[in-house]
Length: 320
Image (cartoon, rainbow, N blue to C red):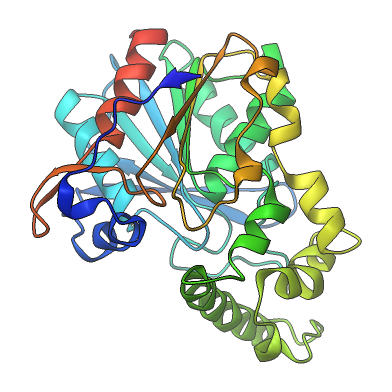
């Protein structure tokens, strides 16, 4: 385990300030260019590229979290930081998260690595000589970690970072049913329920009785996510989609960042570092909230730890 150098300012030691303040103090979104990838099953995913693209620089692939997008606060900051450093950057959108609903009844989930593989394969095909890195946040972090483990030594990436990822999904679902964490659960479930209602209008064959009554992630995943994506139920989904049991298979330099006070996570996400390969650098901070890690500035103009830490790691372990 790597000792964390993250230290919050006195006014941002609370995990909910760390989690919520970045959402309400978003930085500007830089100019982006969309690329649509057609998938073999008839669906599509959208990539949003930082412009202009450079032929002589590494590419950072940003994998967003649940119901996130290029608009998400962490994606904006990473895009801006890549722009300042002269790096290429692209946001990989999960199906239906780019502002346009995907074509098929199915959606995306925490263990769905096939679309990410399509994205990385296409980028590598178009620019085989450029270093290829990725950073995944929250749900996208679990997707990325699972992808890294599945690919092992055949991974198309040279280095990666995983931030605030629910690496053990069952424990995180239980955590979100208690205390103030229920506020986050309620907010995200409302977004998912609205999306499913629209999807049901476009695909009348979908049956989602009692959708509004699915008021926990476990219930939603058991009735919607799991059957929609071929799992027997929530327990089967959580077991098969969690990346934590697979971390020992990661073969490229990978930074995993968690905060011990993350209101989305339970202690079950923390791996036993004795069983991690030398390629995995695990960093657990005392504070930081969920994809927060504010380390300075003011409440009106906070400064952040994540972008510098992640990009320094990627450049150190896989230099351009």
